[in-house]
Image (cartoon, rainbow, N blue to C red; front, side, top):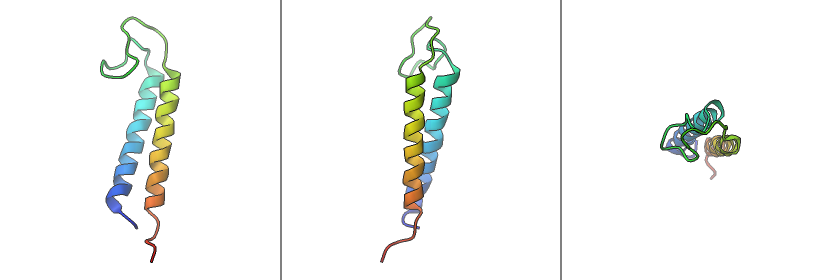
Length: 74
């Protein structure tokens, strides 16, 4: 394994971005946490683009962790 801390960090960030994406899909703009980008009080639409972007970043974090988990090169 190349760097165990980078693998763990990549997996944790990947899970975090998947959770954020789920929150964007399951809550309307008025029900998002106040610190999330896209929060607007009283709005009833879902931020699907924010959710898709979060899922893509999460997948990228998992791919990074996967490549970092490979064997060390000589």
